[in-house]
Image 1: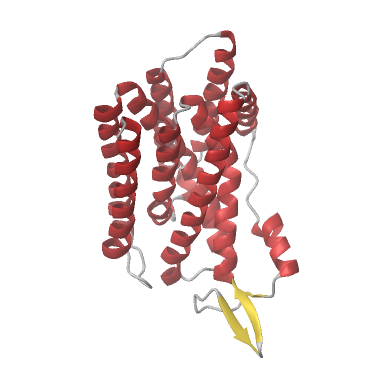
Image 2: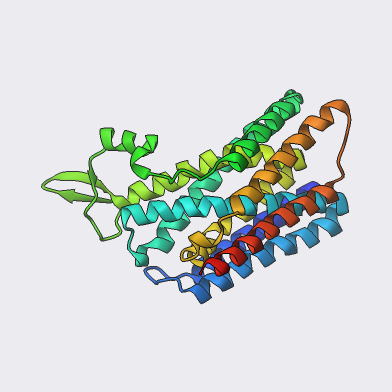
Length: 307
């Protein structure tokens, strides 16, 4: 077996073990997830991602390992922004706390399937049309500038979501059911519940975020395994981060600006390669780490001052 095949095999085995461990030991159906449990789950997923970084370093070399950890941190930072939208969706539909873990799990697994599809298409396009990377760079640059210069992010309103409005038109929905079921029968007619609606919104909302995050990963590495693993590990940690950050939405006021700077840097990096200017991967890693953790620390300090 080649080094790449071994890495794929190890990733698959670790992934199945981790999901089984998370479901069997850390999550029980109908149980509420405490802050302490969410913290341990977050530590588990982050530690697993860094353990795979060590394996990649030993198996495939330090360059690909640095590309992987840079891509993972990039995806992880973008996923935090994703979580705040998830919180608004759960609040809007008033999902019962005992159903939250199961709903998040199903929504996130669907999001992973969509991401794998997008990545597969993206890899095929980049392999055949290398110049598409420069289009990705331009998109990231424009997106980063828009995010950074925005005075205040417009609050996400699920009622204005195109997917939700489409479901309201074509599906019979019972928004009052609190049982946690996906469907129910009333007077001989089958209805879809709010839990079903939330799962669909979680999966489709992640697609919007993937349109920015996946091109950003391609800017760091075009290695197929790096792109897949960094995305999957970051998305799998969303559920624990959701419960960990649920009460701290207003504590990360400047995270958006930190993410914007990273997107601008990644976009410029991709465009610079058009004129044969290549930025080492360790510089990308430093920029991501400084912008991510710097914006988080500054946001927390600023929130404490306001309080």
